[in-house]
Length: 130
Image (cartoon, rainbow, N blue to C red; front, top):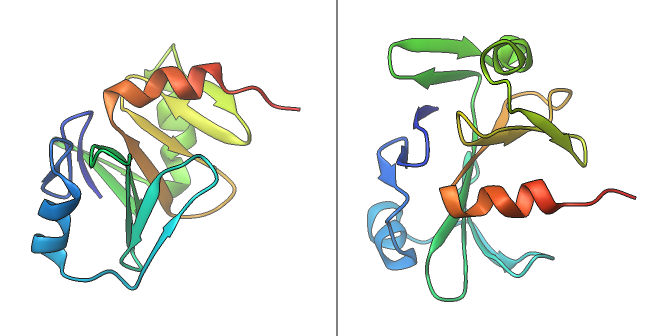
């Protein structure tokens, strides 16, 4: 995964609309609404989630390696990297969330990383467990 935090994921900008993603990638393998009211376009190795108004919220992709500019971090080392480089990182519902890098992931579930739009961070911070 090539990430420019809060800006783009693998060349898709967070300003992209649902129509932009469909134009760039074609019809998804599936499309469904999740339990938090986002519409997910699933392309197998990447899932784009949108609000009803078409605003891109999250991009989840298989990421054996996360590229952040000139830095490449393997998924196996991602939790340690985040904890060492993002003092604001926190855990919610089993996810490690990094405000600095704009990502959320479950360290024990290999290779899936969710890149967040900046406006989503507050929702993760407010998430209650239990």
